[in-house]
Image 1 (cartoon, helix red, strand yellow):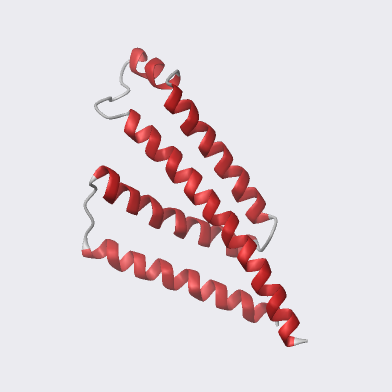
Image 2 (cartoon, rainbow, N blue to C red):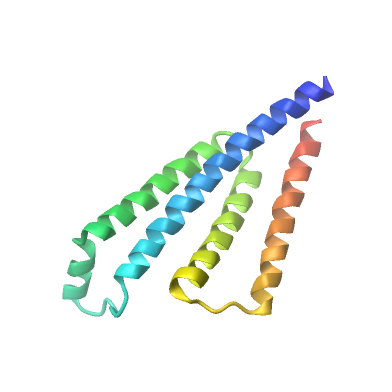
Amino acid sequence: MKLLNYIQFTTKMAKTIIYIMLYATCNVSGAALIKSQLQGSTLSIWREWHKLIFNFNFIIAFSLIVISALFLFKALSTNQFSLIIPIATGINFILTTAVGYFLFQDRLSMLSYLGFVLIISGVFILSINNHEYVK
């Protein structure tokens, strides 16, 4: 019986993590695409807003962000809210920071690296806690 519970839990968590990863990937890709379109723009005049909103890449980016929300909704349907949101937020944060570092040359401090370790530790602890709850 314990083995069956463990297999069911593992399958459920695998689905949840897949949807969370799809959410984070679409969300960060959309945001990065928008950021790349904003290079040199302050959006301080209507013409800059118009140029952004009617840009094909912006439409694709906005669509990716909407799709990311759909993946998050699906993830929420697979597991507990108190598990999904912290994990999704943590993964989204880590992916956002990585994209910022590699694509936009954002600088990271030692405190940022410590934050990564704490986020990953928190996600791991939440996962263990959820598994203990299933027993």
